[in-house]
Amino acid sequence: MRDGDRYGQGFVLWFTGLSGAGKTTIAEIVERDLRARFGKIEVLDGDIVRTNLSKGLTFSREDRNTNVLRIGFVANLLSRNGVGVVVSAISPYKEARDEVRRDIGEGFIEVFVDAPLEVCAERDVKGLYKKAFSGEIKGFTGVSDPYEPPAAPELHIKTNEEEPHESAARVITHLEERGYLWPVEQYREEYDRA
Ligand SMILES: Nc1ncnc2c1ncn2[C@@H]1O[C@H](COP(=O)(O)OP(=O)(O)O)[C@@H](O)[C@H]1O
Ligand SMILES: [Mg+2]
Image 1 (cartoon, rainbow, N blue to C red):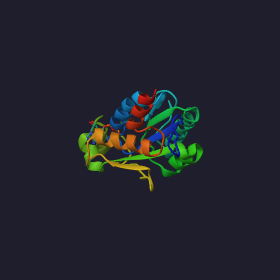
Image 2: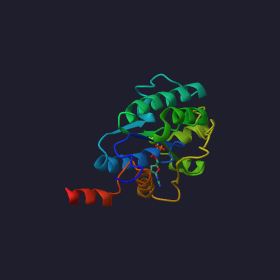
Image 3: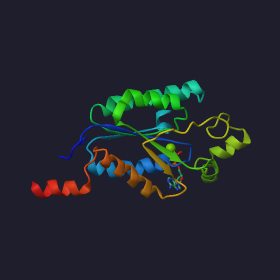
Image 4: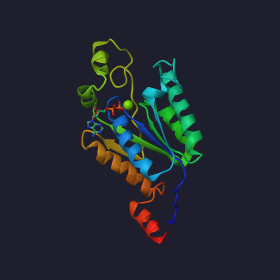
């Protein structure tokens, strides 16, 4: 085993960023890669969480933070039992993200999925920006509600400058460097030895 090997330890990949920045797209590729290389993976996507765990919460600052803390709570329970957790949630406020970081500790890996607002609005995957700009939706992150970018994320991904699979590969490499995943060559060595 390598020095500082954390293989088998849980972790939380926390994708934060504007709507349409690419959190879910990248998280899905990462999830697929991880499933082949790490036993237990769970995904917590903000859009899905809001239909169950956080059903009924609004988009006020308080409720957005409650949503983030709930996701963090579940992610913490899972990761301390050896699960690799992949979270995609706008999580616009630094205070809530930092609280989750404190709770989870070293296994918290913040991935800032960054694209200029104009690019997200141009993509308009769900047609929400159109409604936000027309005023039909109020308090929309990046348009009429704040997004506080992470000051020191473990990874900063600019999705207008690289392809989703390149971003996903950087996330996987980060996990290898931190010792949560064995580099592929090491699998081969272990396999050859067995
Ligand atoms: N480099 C990139 N990384 C991620 N998504 C990208 C990239 N380039 C274009 N896209 C597109 O941007 C959109 C991002 O949507 P999505 O992943 O649902 O965002 P989010 O989950 O952050 O709201 C998708 O339609 C995706 O195909
Ligand atoms: Mg999404």
